[in-house]
Image (cartoon, rainbow, N blue to C red):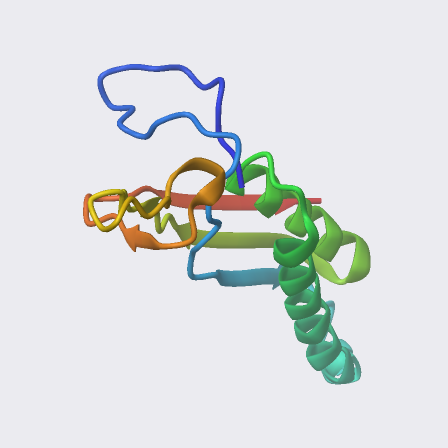
Length: 138
């Protein structure tokens, strides 16, 4: 994931970066189009599991494969794909807390390189992080 070129102000504490670990917990949900009757709901029941499977697959594949400009951009793409794949869904929403990790300077230990392109060991940030929420409707 990346995030750079954003407006800096007194609340912006995160450094700009073109490549960072994309780590979060995903809470996804959706709202169905309005059904005309209970009979219509009963007829649609077999599609409910298919919709869940589609949403899960889209979420997993997009996180794994997207060259993410930002988490916000990736989440928007996932919403668009679910709406395209499941025509009976009216609205898709996601909630994702930021989880940031930073490289650890290990040069103090025998000159070990662990910064920049050589970084392999990271530590979680303990400072408060943001919460990204997105809702996309037809």
